[in-house]
Length: 316
Image 1: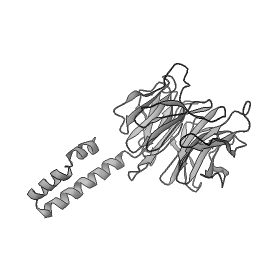
Image 2: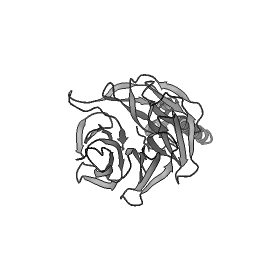
Image 3: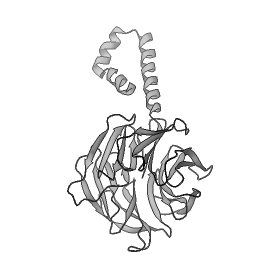
Image 4: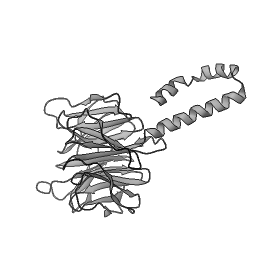
């Protein structure tokens, strides 16, 4: 990529000292500024919206303004589900392969089995979260798994949530959050919380009378989908300030949520659309992007904002 090429061309501190001796000061400053500008432009070019389409077996991509929609940006997955991104890479689960895969933001360098689940008894990973050091995932049972960001040291049963049907997972501050939604066996639906080291499990951190699903953390808040009420909920990281219908997503079934920059994004797997609203919950555009996927296809969503953010999370 241009960023890689330029990064390789930037001299080390010692080499820079040698170059400055040969380069007049009046010329050195413009050259350095030009390199910095190109790096910013290249980084901004990677800013985009990414989503998984489990029916098509692809990962799609669009520009932040909703244009340049590419349904088959990556066509290697079989049944992709959850997806997250940081400033350099995408990570997604493949429920058919039972693995977590990765690729660069430009779609290259696909590694199918980046995280391998050890043993045939390990549940299949579905939804993802990340921080600067680790990947986290839910299985659909009562465990949350974890690995290092490089895919090593896999711990498929890192947190025993003491709940059933764990669906969404998010990481924020010093805690892991999750949604549990199995009213038949584990009422009521709820948001749970534990410390980042897996201790101090609080399985009833926030009660939710509706069906909580996928979730994400952004700054001082957690957000989660409610497919039963066609809405996205929001609460502070300490569990206060709960707003159950913070964003009304319209007639359909909201499946995943991502928050980046100044916007909240979501996938609707009935309508085959991606919606968007401002961070305050206003200016809702329910069909911001019309992907055109078949019913039940759109699952996870991840957004990499402009400006070179260090981390941008998404869910599936």
